[in-house]
Amino acid sequence: PNADELQRHITKRVDSVSELLAEGISASEQRRAIRKLGLVQVAGELAQEFGILPSAHDVRHTIKTVRDAWLGDVGNRPAAVLGAIAVQSHILRNRDYYRDALSSGIGAMSGREIYGYHNGQSDLFLFTHEGFAEACAGYNPQSVASELASRGLLHMNDNRHKSKQMIRQDGTARRLRLYAVKGSILDTDFEQPAS
Image (cartoon, rainbow, N blue to C red; front, side, top):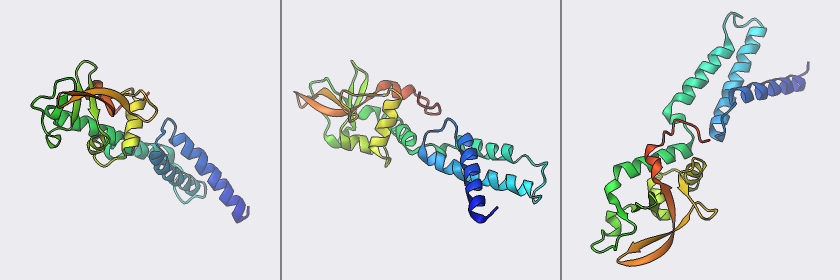
């Protein structure tokens, strides 16, 4: 075969192997990394076919082992999941700094002393855009909100990941558009994929 045919054959084989390796994985950054493993697997298989590597070595099993170890490493989770974990950690670490959204606000803490609001009746942690961005710890707030929504952890009544909520500020009831994270985030195991 000529070089063009060989290139098409190898590309098709890498595509096929990569799809099998990435089965069940939706995060694009993980799929891109797994494609590189697909390339390594095809190179190993070709090296065996041409007698460069011994055929007794199980290239597929080795690549799957590497893939599973890589996916199991906490640092290799999709950025949106890491951001959701950051929000969870932020709430757990700073629970005392979420003001009751329904209280009168008398003697309320200043904005620097609170991170958001908690609506105990609905069990929602409420964030302004700025507060949510801070809780996301540098991860893209929209991606994190999408991840939370896909897991049923974000209460929304619009299509932009926000919810109109009534809170009391300085004794006055106000209706604001806020990120409303469900209290069940505190019990969520982010090791499990979103359903």
